Length: 131
Image (cartoon, rainbow, N blue to C red; front, top):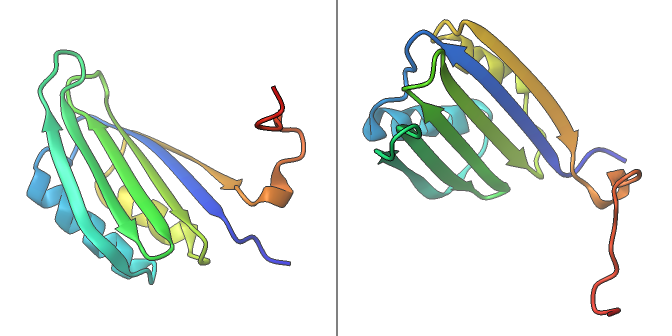
C-alpha cells in the first residue's frame, strides 16, 4: 500500500531571502503547485509580518489534496525560509527542492514524513473522551 499522507518539509537559509513580496510569493507558490501537478483549491494568501524579530512573509495555499505553507524571515542572519508541502496525492519532492534551489540558498535541508495513521507507530497516542 502506498503512502497516502505525504508531508515534505524544507528549510533553507539565504544571504537574502527571495520571499520579500506578497505578490512574488503568491506567484511562486502558484508555479510550485503547477510544477508538482496539484490543483489550487484556494489561491495563495501571503502576508508580510512587521513584528520585531519576526519580519517576513507567511503564506498559505489550499490545494485539493491538502496545503502548502511558507514562512520567510528576512532579518535573521542568515535569512531563513521554511516550506511545507502536504498532500494525499503523490508528488516529486525533487521538484520542490529544485524550485527552492533556483534562488541559490546557502544551506538547504529537507525531511519527508509519512503522516498516514498506519505510520504512527512510536507516536504517543491518546484515547479522547476517556477522562
